[in-house]
Structure formats: C-alpha cells, structure tokens
Length: 208
Image 1 (cartoon, rainbow, N blue to C red):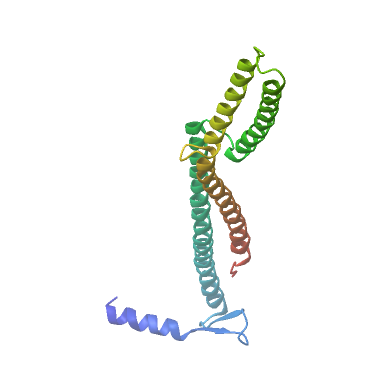
Image 2 (image 1 turned 60 degrees about the horizontal axis):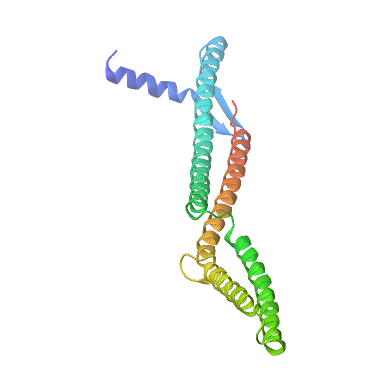
C-alpha cells in the first residue's frame, strides 16, 4: 500500500470513530461504525484493550513520579538527620562531655558548695587568730582556705573561662542539638508526605 492509500485509509478509519464526553463528566463514550456489528464490536474491544494498557501506563508513571519525589525528600531528610546525629556525637567525643548545660549546672553547684566551705574556713581562721594568735593550727587553716580558693578559681575557669570552657562549648552544643531536632522533624514530615503521596497516587487512578 502506498503512503497516500494508507493515509486515505487512516482518514476513513478516523471518520468511523467518534469519541465524546458525556455531559462534561468523567465518562468518555466511544462509538464505532462498521459494515457489520461484529466488526464494530471487535474494533471496539481492541481499542478498549489498547486504551486500558495506555491508561495503566499513564497511571503507573504518574504514581511513580509522585512517589519518587516524596521518596527523594525522605532520603534527603534521612541523610540530614544522620549527619546531624554524627556531628553531635563527634562533638561529645571530642570534648568528653554529654551535655555541657547539665555539666555546667553541676559545676555551679560545686562552686557554691566550695564557697560555703571557704566562708567557714575563713571564719574559723579569723576566730582562731583573734582568740589564739599563736595557735599552731593557723597555718593549716590558712592552707586549707587557700586550697579552697584555688579550686573555686579552677572550677570557675572551667565553667566560663573562655573558648574551652563549658559556657563556650554550650553554644556549639546547643546549635548541634537544634540541628538534630530540626532534622528529625524534617524526616518525620517527609515520611508523612511519602505516605500521603502513596495514598493520593492510589486515589488518582483512571479506569477504562
């Protein structure tokens, strides 16, 4: 068959087929005209079979695209969550601390206790000097008060003495902790979006 003959046949074929929507609804009507009813039904069945295969491929592609996008978001969120957790763990290992804020609270309590001990030691020293200025224990009392003062100074420097102090580390720890929390929330939201995408993909099916 020449090309012109094939084109004529195709045009004639198209003139025997009518496709129309029913009252602008989601229903589409297919009408076939043929010389015999059996031929019309056979053509109709073949077209419906091919149409169903096409629609199934379109449904699958649409579903795959929707779900794939959501899966990529989950993968990105999970990677960010893992990276944030690893960064926080590395910070803890490098600095030898679990939670600088809690450890700072412990240090503050220790300093407060040492200050109470220093007050008591100084009070004892003053009283002893006044009542018994030649008491041989005075030197020991002075040494104890000095040792407590040095420990208070050391604990204070550990708490807020610069970049390596707990106060300095607390800022970076807080930033890393917030990143972990934010990344976990993103992962939770992404997983919810994936579930919604799967549900939506199942609802948006077209049938023949």
